[in-house]
Each structure stands twice: as structure tokens, then as C-alpha cells.
Image (tube, rainbow over all chains, first blue to last red; front, side, top):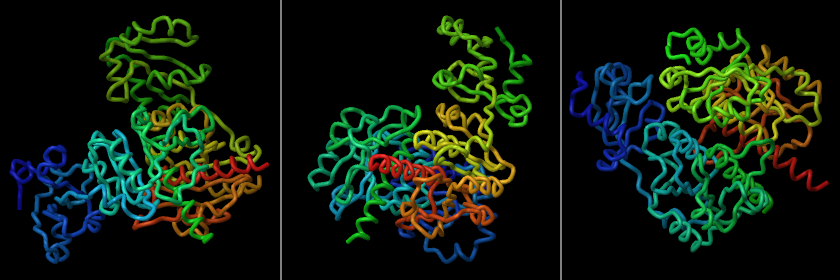
Length: 263
Length: 263
């Protein structure tokens, strides 16, 4: 059992929580909590850390797994954890690797393209909602918040392992790629021409979603086939990015369910 | 200028930020930031606190207002502010008072009923989205997070002043009141009978939204006329409460816009 916060493994763990650079160098990330532990594809598990208390209660379950388990004293575990009320289990997990071409080649893909999204809670919520709405892939500009940030992974509630995603260096280039596959590209834009529900999303559809404070840059918005807006009452100028994305995703889901029934 | 954090007004300000009890006793709340300041109905302004730097830059604008202005040294201002990067202006604002009967008596009201919602960010996002979706009132159970919590007021982005709301002691009783006014009551429920988009929301409609972790209690869900679900793909069990509410609100908005056009 590790009983010192000065232990090399504990120091490494803390750095993996805090720094994207360290995560990317090792090709791993940290997942915290008992519920999400059950959703990690076991072949991705590199190492499991548990608190002494968690170990005592879950000895049998842990003995059955084909992954190395390291026990930390409760104090050291609380030190290494990112949450205020840690649940006693932390996993080092291999990063997920997807290829853009694979993600956009399917039949009628439903894609989100995120440009410079910054809030970890928003990204986590978008990934969780995306799974529920049947999104097939998420494409992110390199300057979006890191998907392996502990705040993001937590708020995805496990959907991180089920919704494919890629970071791209050049977003307009990725959008050009989508168009080659006949995917219609819609920019969520306050000055959109049509209301979002006046478009037909039965074919391959992608939505460009912009930064929380500034929306989409003109450069990125210009790559879209059409700008759509969410009609708004009152004096509201814009919606929260995760809310706007959710309204659009569930409109696609709604239309596709309706079309399915009418066939 | 106030230069000490020990000043009685500064102490009172900090307590008003932190404690609902103090806010309710005084019948006021605190609003922070330059943008939201411009959205406060001026008759509600009790007192404005500014940092020395803010005062220097905005002396003329502040001189025009018919409200008392108190200047704090920058250090004291930062101490009193709730945000990490304060913008130099803090307002003491009178609490808003609405009457349930007034809120539900209009033509085809669009109402949200929140049961034990706990996350300040969720409540703020719901209020902001509600204004955009044309919601006419929000009814909250007494055990919901305090709408005057600084985290809530900030994330409403000013919509707090434009979307009427009430807290009620007895939620089932409030729902019974809605029904008297022929408002259809829908419970957002994972085991809902119909998909949310199969219902007609052209008449008065109210949605019951439950707690983040536990959803709606059976007692409250039972008061609804019908339970509706948001159909979900993948392994997602539930959506974030603000996302679920947003999808429902904008479905009402969508249907009503469509109906308006067809007339």
C-alpha cells in the first residue's frame, strides 16, 4: 500500500489529472468513480488505483479483473483524486483513437463540429447528450478544451467511451472533407437564414457549434452550406453552447424517428 | 471610499452573497458585472458598489443614475466579489415578487415546474433558455436551489429579470391549480408513455422537471396528466436536467411557431 503523497506513482497521477501535456505524452487519461469504472472497456485499462477503504469492500470484484490494482491509503487517495468527495477508485485509461475518414463514411452520419469550445462542463454535457441523440461522431478544433480534462470525462457520464471523436488541426479542411462525403453542413448562427426546424436532416448532416463567448468565427461559419438559427423570444441574444447543440441534435433525432415511422 | 474589509457594509455584502437567509431577511440579492447591470430594472436597484478603478472609468455614467453609489478600494472590492475576476460593479437589488395566479391566468401559458432542482448552473441555464423559448413562468418547489444564489443569477445572463418565477410550498397543490386553468401537465419521465414530440402543446402546457440525480419523485410525477419521454439512443440513461428541459421547451416553441404559420 502506498502511504506517502511523495510516492512517484502518486506524483505521476496528480500530473496526469492536471496536465494535458502529460496525458498526451503517456497516451492515457484518468477516470474517477465507481459508476464510470463499470463503463470503461476493459482492454483500455492500464492501471487501477483504489483507496484502502474501497479495497476492503471490493476485494473480490477487484481480484477478478485482469488489470493491475494499486492500493493507496485513504489520505493519499483523497490527495490524488480530482473530486472533493472521491469514491475510492481512479483508473488510468488508454486514450481513444479514431480516424476522421472512418467516422464520416457511414450512412447518413449525424455529426457535431465544435470550434474553440472552452468550457469543460459544456463539452461533457454535449458528449453525453450526443450519445442520447444518436450523434455518430464529434469533430473538434485543436483549440477546444481537452476531452480528457477530468471535468469533461466526469460530465460525459460514460458516453466518452461510446461517442467517437477526433481533434483536427484545420477545421475548414475537415469540413471540406465532410462535403466530399455529401454531408450537409449547417452552421448554428444567430444571423442564420432559416430556422433550424425548416431544414431536412434525413441525409448526412453536420452542425458547426462555436465558442461560448464569441460564437462561430466568420472563417468557420463560411465553410457551412447554410446558416441556421434557433428562433428566440424575449431579449435573449444567444443560448448556452451545450443547450444550442442539444436543441439541434434532438431536432435531427426527431425528424429521423418521424421519417422512419412514415416509411 | 471604503478601504477596510472590516467595514460593516462590506461584511453585510459578503453575507448577502453567501446566505439565502440574509438575502430573504432583507428582501434583496446581489448582482455582479457590468453587462447584467444594464439589464437590472432601475426601480429595483437599492445600492451600487463599485471598485475604485471602475469608478474612475465610469464616473459620468454613475452620476446619471438615481441610485446610491459606494466606492470600494480595489482590494476590498475583490474581497467582496463572488467571482474570481470581478468586473468592478456589484448591485444590491430588490427581490422579484410574482403571484402564482397571475402567472397561470394568461392565454396558453408555457410553464416549467421544477421539483428539487439542486445545481445552480442548471437553474441559471434553464431560466436563460426559458426566456429564449418563450416560457411564460417557472414554478419551483421550495427545496430547489435559491434563484438568488450568485451562481444562478450570473448564469441567467439577465433573463432572471424577464422570466417570472415563484417558489411554492406544496408542488402537487400548485399543479392542481394549473389544472383548474385547463393547463395540460406533462411529466418529463424516463418511463414516459409517449415521445415528447407526439404531444400537442398549442394549448396551455406545463412540464414537470425533476432533480438531477433522482428525477421526479413518484408523488410529483403522479400529478401529471401524462408522462412524456425523450427517446434516447445508445446507453444513455438520462439527460442533464437543463438539457432535457431545453429540448422540451423548444419543442413547444417549434410547434407554436408552426401552428402560427399555418393559420
